[in-house]
Amino acid sequence: MDTTSPSDIALKLAELRQQHRALDERIAQLAANAGDELEAKRLKRRKLQLKDCIARLESLLIPDEPA
Image (cartoon, rainbow, N blue to C red; front, side, top):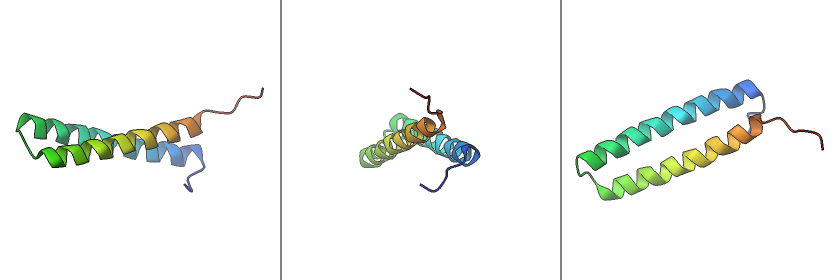
């Protein structure tokens, strides 16, 4: 990942969180309408990938403390 400044990381985090929310809404729509189960599984997998990426980026924002 080439984003090293905190402001770049924060922008990427905001983008990923928005994508995560959009996937959440789409998954809810599929569940409510008895939609395509395969698509729902694919979207859930992508949502988990986004969650992992968000967690990694958040950990980059935590400053290192001296021992």
